[in-house]
Image (cartoon, rainbow, N blue to C red; front, side, top):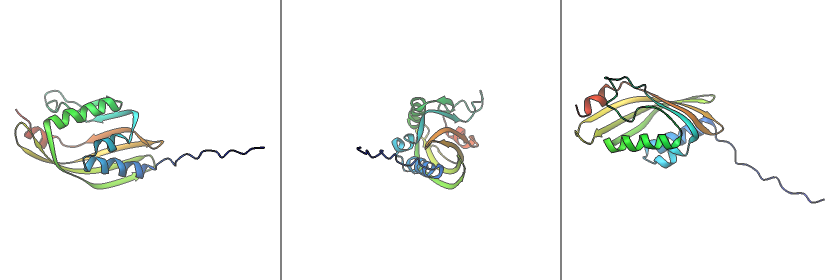
Length: 147
């Protein structure tokens, strides 16, 4: 009887490992690394659009899948230059991770700088981010955008 070795599968990354990889990619500008953490069908919720208030930020809204997320990054980066971004706090509990991000950016058209802290809430299953939701006060961003 011939015995064949069962191919071993790499271990599934933990929620903490996925979150650390995501935030490292995001804060170093390695968007491909960050996007590689997302499930193909990720639910991406970048604030709720409130007509007449925050709809001047065309990258916000709810999106499904990596292709739509990539498009929001493209839109954002066509309008804003990120000068500095860093992870301030990371909290992990089960399949959930919450990171507080500090960002200082410049709106290209106006040259105005904004500084914000925002929360990214990640849900991780099977080593991938299946849901991403952000929270912040967008006032600083809105003030920096063209009128």
